[in-house]
Length: 394
Image 1 (cartoon, rainbow, N blue to C red):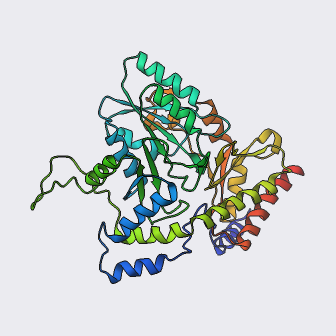
Image 2 (spheres, rainbow, N blue to C red):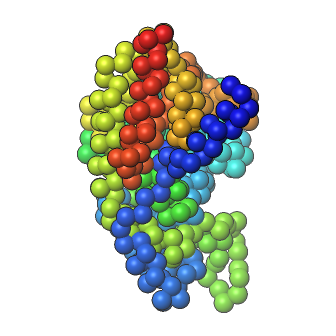
Image 3 (cartoon, rainbow, N blue to C red):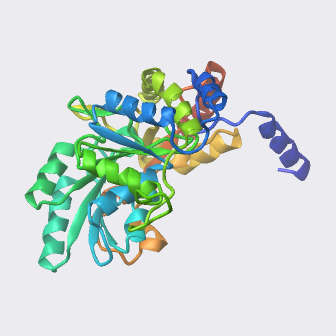
């Protein structure tokens, strides 16, 4: 292609608005509630919207108590602290996840031990989990917690993981950052372990711009989380500190956004599940394309629709799809690169790995935002269709 042709192609693509993987979707009373916060001059951390948001999260999920925080990572960090994780300890973590599931383990000076996924949910394999616990204990290690992830909104087999954790008296932390609205046997993700973690980052199913929450049935633990999250200030007329604290609390303004978002969460879940069905119908006649399964007992919010592409059957691979979409200014991303393959964790112990490695090799996340328009859908389907058609006529 000549230089002028390349320039024209670049300009043509730039004229098309970017279709993002999972952009924020403001559709409720967010503006009204934020204006209320400004009118009251209550814009700093804490405030009535924070209190209300915590209550509403509990009502929605069925959790006993919630602490609204600055991020899901902050929530996970506090959960580890409350589980007593310290330097020299080990925490078993799902390998197939985003780095934020593992990084707070290192914040505490502990060692992450990575466990592979099972094929039918893509989440932590309960059998490998027990194998890992047995082996670590036989080596004299102190396993202080397990971090299991509900990946892409798909519930893990929480009851099986919990049974293993209870057998060895190890607390379970549910990383439900991607799974607000998802349920396992009717129970909300994030409400079965000792702690549950939510994220309200800009790409999540609801957003507060940036933010997260810690859920628990343990009132004293949530109270301590709030204490630690506000710089651990002891009751005194001056600033007194007997513990190391953090600046992790959510602001009243961001909580106002979250309250407006929460009001339309069910609409967003319906939209994302409808997107999944549309992709499923599109690919149903394409041999070699598979979707993340929704096994018996699971209800997924389908935060992201993800596919596996068997190049041997399809005649194309996930990278060919991704590049074709990118050429049309449509964002797609590979599935998470497993933590045991990440340079920063290259020396960490791990159990299994072949399942998550295959998922990373063959997997692609497709645009799934709840605000996708019909015009955007036409661009997506046209681009995907061109790749499929080309492979069939090769």
